Image 1 (cartoon, rainbow, N blue to C red):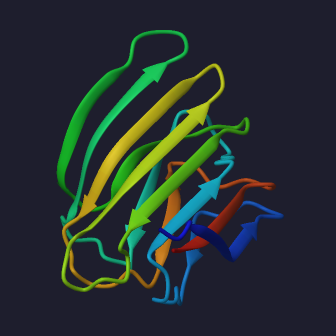
Image 2: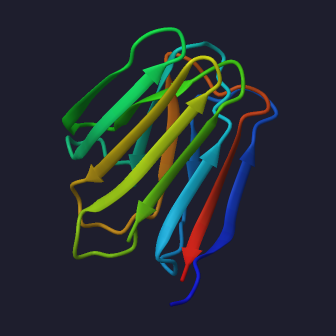
Amino acid sequence: MPQATYIPLATITLSSTDSQIDFANIPNTYRDLVITSNMLTTADTVTGVIRFNGVTTSTYNAVQMYGLGSGSGASGSQSNQTSFSDIFGRTSPGFFQMQIFDYAQTDKHKSGLIRVDQAAYATYAAAVRWANTAAITSISIAPSGASWTNGATFSLFGIAG
């Protein structure tokens, strides 16, 4: 079985604040996609918003859980949302990773995994599904009620293999 290879497709590093980052014109030549980020925002306890192809209809679903560094966590689900959300952004660096499976296939809904780790604040994980059969050609990520800040970095990889 061939080993998966991460192919860098794009990296965005902000030199000033921005309300949203966009990966556009994503080629359909890979099996999966992976996005990583340090998730730096202008405010703490920020919810992130992720959308595919600019779609804002109620087609985003998730099962998630998180644990807080200073207290208890929670788990739950979201159905028929207008974006994937509940992703933590902070003013201090953290780790965000989203893997999207079979993103270019047009015969199935898209599924993926999200993981966020913010030292001394929270660990978050989610299994997500976009109830749409369109190939993913663009991805936008925005912090709700804040902005991405100077030094925020986002990288997109295609997974071959």
